[in-house]
Image (cartoon, rainbow, N blue to C red):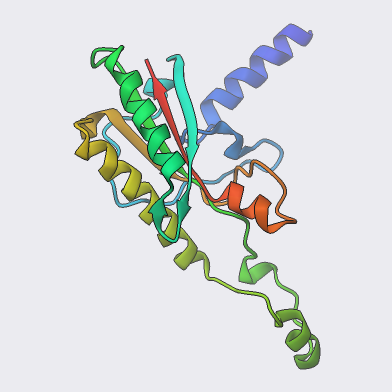
Length: 187
């Protein structure tokens, strides 16, 4: 009985998943599939192509004031070196992330006095602006890879916004860690 239920659940889940890299976006109990945000860079292949492949390298790269950090440049060089051992039989994923934000539809209407104190010292940013910022980071990594002779047909990209935090959003350091671009090599 359990085996039949597991197989049925697996078949249902496989059929119902969205076509982005991280399948946790499928919210099983609600039936809602959250699609990723367009980056402006066409994906040359469907993500299902790499689901069966092995991961040879994974790292997170970070930006400081819109520029890749020195450590991140080293990680990109490591990725480029790892491609050499796979003789063109590889794919690279470039997945952008950001720290959490509050949707306007989720905010509570406050009195003007409470709103003043609530907003004192807090920065607000629109979801659109945040998505554009993530896309700029993704494009910077994509352009770096292209500049170093990685064919566009080998690069899959995705903007995941705040769906996959690595750590707490309660501290500024945690938010910094969550604002990243994950790069991975599959063969």
